[in-house]
Image (tube, rainbow, N blue to C red; front, side):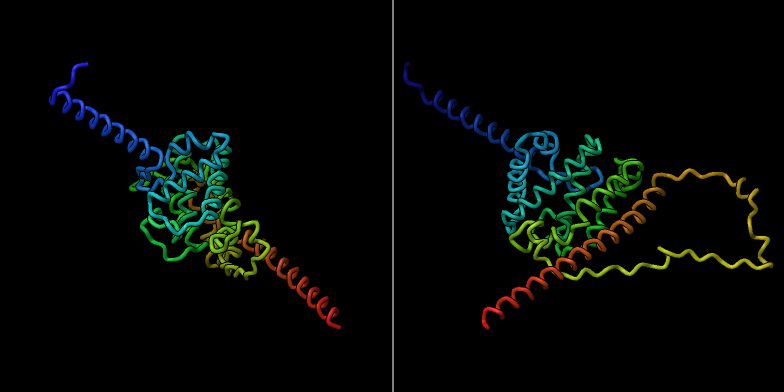
Length: 303
């Protein structure tokens, strides 16, 4: 081939640079599609992308890929305090959330909102997750704070109005509430003690010795005080005929949401806390008994 002149060499160089720029842009767009933390129309953060939900969860090696995905998005968001065990625990929780999502039959926006809602509650106020936490607030994690965020996000995506968008209907709310109670809030202490120790939740359960204060129940939860009706107020009592004539009001999704969330979460959380306290106390008694046996054995050897 004859040697290229300067114009041809310059054109080839520019063409190669353009090809590299296009390739870099394609890679950037692909990385953003996979690992970018976008926002839903309600302004809720979406740290778990549509890509991971649609393409990764279904694979056989999903558990490995999900942990790699978490490492990538945490690296992009400068979450530098996390250890390997933190990634393991968060990945396992995400897999549980996706299994529940499949059981509920959620697809599209419902799957996207459900999984991200669970993950946002999980990392809520968690200092190790840095910039992924909504608003950047990491003032200290609490069970009450996680409950409050869950109620807020569920309400925001099951009603219509300013800042809201109805994704879930009334009949889907109770299964979601049941899941977060059993799959997250009921073992909240174990899960977040594990972030402070280099152990998994099941391992730390053996060593965990903590007194769990039970919330004081309000009288309104147990007793309904009816006014005493005297002869002078008999005229205010409705007869059976009048009560039958009252038009039945079909409760709206919003009314069902308020009663379902407030009653179901409060009742089930109290029950879960009582059960956990009982297990922890039983374990503490067992440990103390073993320590006494060991002390007695040592004393016997010295004699």
